[in-house]
Length: 198
Image 1 (cartoon, rainbow, N blue to C red):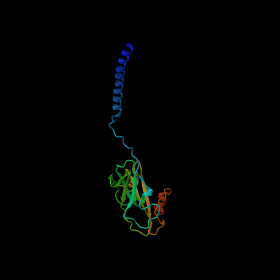
Image 2: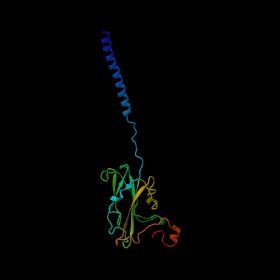
Image 3: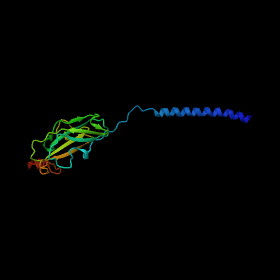
Image 4: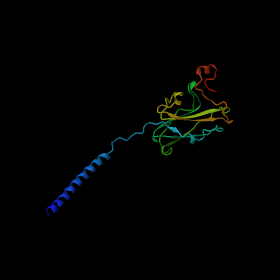
């Protein structure tokens, strides 16, 4: 009988101990589940142009000038504001000649963003001089070094940017296309009347 009484007493005691342990576990779980109050921020990452998807393709010389250049840009954070600038025959040695217009901004909108891809529709006027080759560029960044100085509007600020380049020549070849050889001395080119542009 003494053994039976001990057994009856120990069952409620064990139940109380288990209930207490259960309460402590639930309380600790609630504390761990509480949010820190701060939403983690995605570090700034440069926009990346999806070069294989730009329209028109950059892999061949344009013989007809498109009304719109379509530039898909991949963003680490699809909600960020980005800036882009278009250039025709950009020449950094001649005060940055070649900017088409003031840089433009692109904000997140459901109509221009699919997942992490923002699509830019860049309007660039056809060059008046159609009897030679032209270099067309679209620079994309979170920020540019300057949006008012033509030379620095071509340069992305940290964390960097990307550029898409097309060549346009109604004759279909690259002869006479502007190209800058960074290895040439600008003063020698300027004296020769070339200005670093071939």
